[in-house]
Length: 226
Image 1 (cartoon, helix red, strand yellow):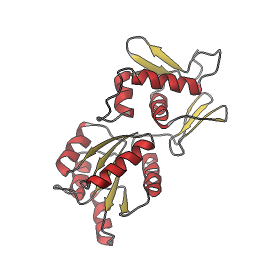
Image 2: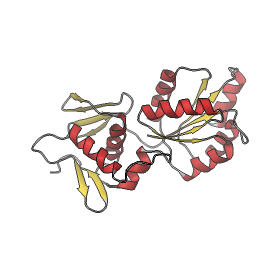
Image 3: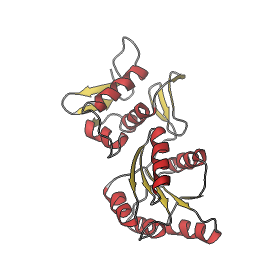
């Protein structure tokens, strides 16, 4: 998942980016309302973690403007003020949920999982191709009922391939989905992680579920293809 964190407190922003990245998300970060509006308009995010009290326009106005511009990604609003009228104001502005500081990271992760399942883009609760299943909420991958061990970044790559099963996905598509702008890795990082995905999900002696489209990228095979 690609997330946008909007937080002007540098310590809190660092904490959120590190924690969400460890969960396997690609995370972009801005610290003011102007940059938040630009980022959330120019890029497709799976969810936005939005602090209410940021340099103008504040989080309430950012949320209101995004909804007015028909940007419907889930928005989790953060605030240091535990007042009912603030929570109501955030929800009325179009936020999907509200979390008061200080909070436990486990609760933040849980709330995001719920919001991602409510995305306006139709999302099946569990992705399924043949006997391979992926549950975005529990971060669990199974094949023929057996749980497969997969690292968070490889999970993000597999999830994107499964959501686009049958379609050609370019290396740039995968890079944009699974890595943030600050990542400065090797040019073949996508190929490395696709290989890790194959090592996890494929069976010896059978064609890979992830097909290489030479010179373009990859395609997740749909049920029945060989």
